[in-house]
Every structure is written in C-alpha cells, then in structure tokens.
Length: 191
Image (cartoon, rainbow, N blue to C red):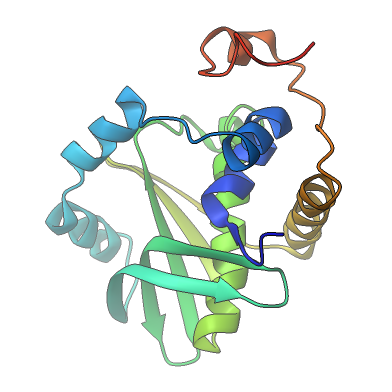
C-alpha cells in the first residue's frame, strides 16, 4: 500500500479517477507534449516578476517539497511566498482560462493547488490564505481562497482515491468522453 499519494495524482484523480488509478497501479504514462512544453517555457524570472506585480510580498521559495501526514499526500509546489505566518501558493500552468473555467473545466488544477495549500500548512506551519494560479504564456493570474468547502472536497477526493487503491478497485472513469479521446490509456481502459 502506498503511504503517500503524489499531489499530482490527486489532480489526475479529479480529472479522471480511472486514469489516475491506472497511472498509479498499472503503469506510468510517458510525459505528454504539454508536460514537456511546460518545462520548456518555465521561466522563474517571469514568475517572480508576476508575483511581485500582483503585490504579493514576502520570501519567494521555488520548487518547494511538501508533505501532509494527515492527508497522506506529498508533492513539490511551483512556488510559495512566505510572509510571517501567512503563505501564498503559486501554481503555474499553461492554460487556465478564466476563473469560471477553473471551477468547471479545469477543476483538477484547482484540486492540485488546494492540496498543495493544505500540505504547505502542515509542512511549513503557516496559514495559506491565497492561491494564485499563473498562466505562463498569457501572464494572466487567477486568485482564489482555499475555502473550507474546497478543503473538504479535497479531503473527500483523497479518501476516495485511497479507498480505491487499498481495495485495488477500479474507480469510475470520467463522464467527459472528450477526455477519453486523448487519454494514453484509452485502448486498455475497461468499459
């Protein structure tokens, strides 16, 4: 049994529970073109500039390892800005669209950022009061608060994911058939 679930897999689980399960239990997916491109365009100077333009003050830490023993998750957040006992999570993405799309189409990114916030609080003994998601290409930001309802949503998703892993029980796949068309596992995913 896996002691800690990678936070990136929490994101995948919200995107498609079946895909996350297959990645964890059967095989790893090779890096996608968007993953390779994201690494290529990552520009830390640009990210730091955008953080400062947002008026976020404090010490900027990049590629911060985080872990929550309470939730059983582990990961590496793009950036954290620490100001006293407060922190801001910075997550960079290639495409986030609008705030509305973040809560609908890109809710897996919202899940990942919220899980990072919860892990940062436990790891660094700070309070995360803001999450800033940066679209690297368009230099657009979306700021959200890690509300109690978002935190409960993530706790439930992690519990559900852990249950499927422990029981070696295949979770349901996404109901969004467009996601299936581009999935690496589409040819081996059971109906």
